[in-house]
Length: 396
Image (cartoon, rainbow, N blue to C red; front, side):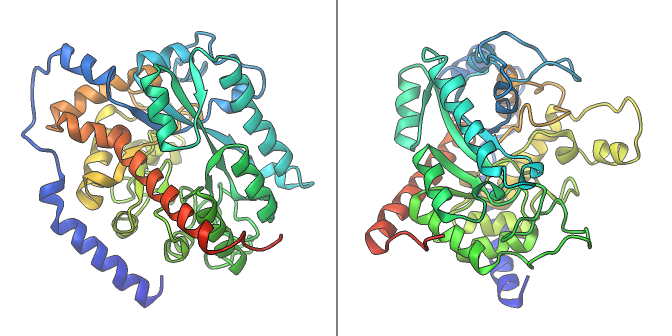
């Protein structure tokens, strides 16, 4: 991070910390929250989960409508029935492209397969449950119709095979965010997953082409997702983007020291530009106790807990403010989920826990979906403006 960026980050952090009193939970902790209140919120508030990886199973033939369960080691964390019971109103399904597809230039092929499983296997295959959504308005319309909005988020910037033409094609097919990297550094952006590996050639953030990718995403109206990226890539994306950023499934490094998590200055700067950090539920990212034990290869490690998730939400709200925190579970993309929040049906447990910590219904509405809708609308507005000002970026 250069000196100018440090000053910006420090200023943003100071603003966020200074305002935390007005952005935290509205009241004191509560006890004996009635089940009727939990149920009312569960079945009315629009809950948007910005990252779910069940697609890595549906692409191989799993029926998302087939009842399933998760026992801690096998099964799935997601199916249509449990999404309904959990009160989930919208899901960004991950078009996840593993780094192995880079070999032989198969990334685009895999991306199309993953987009197809969302559009065909999930949405077209189950029209009574799901409807494809590509905008904030369409998410709200689906909720009014009693359907689950299915959205597409590409995970791994190598999916575009260094081509802005492919990026534009993915947008036309419905992709509304792209994670700039996965665990692998690509040809134009550094990843947190290999940043410490000296055998990997790094760029010190974004290359000039990487910045062009970000600007074209802005013009299209595709959210720039900085989960998985190296710290300098985040700062470069923040400085380059003309629209707010999203961290589709990240948590707080101050609580759990994982490179995938965001530092307080990063969270504050993300918020200062209008972005949203969506809290990830992976045990390794929300529990230092679990992460340390897992690194030491201990056996029979107790999983993270619902309290750990709440602690990360509280911390993110303290740093970013109430308008800049959301939910990105990473269900079915993680090997360990917290006790009490181990699959999509258990979001009512989170609702109860938030109420018990003093969050109001209005604040829960923001956390669950309001902040994401506001972010999407800002990205859409920027795109509308930019499309009037300039043509498509580059011809790659």
